[in-house]
Length: 114
Image (tube, rainbow, N blue to C red; front, top):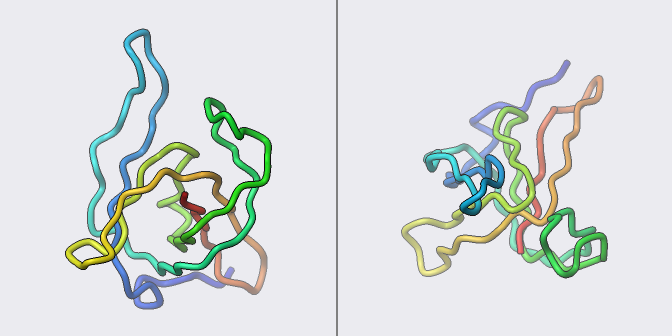
């Protein structure tokens, strides 16, 4: 299996995973910083996989795609901070994520952000 390597991912992001929902609201994991990523700011249509979203199941526009290593995949509604320390820094929710693991291609996950 071909592997995507950290050296192919020039940016760093912070991921705060949604672990679940409890009686008192959402349960969040600790922020994971310095996650290797490839960040691309471009609009594309994706299906909203956030169960509590009013647009759940509908096509919505994702403004940013973040490519990460497979072990850094994050569920919908997790929060990702991109471009930290720059004027473009922002934190957005994951709308949906795609996981790719095929023979002969680099395995990776794509996080589509609001």
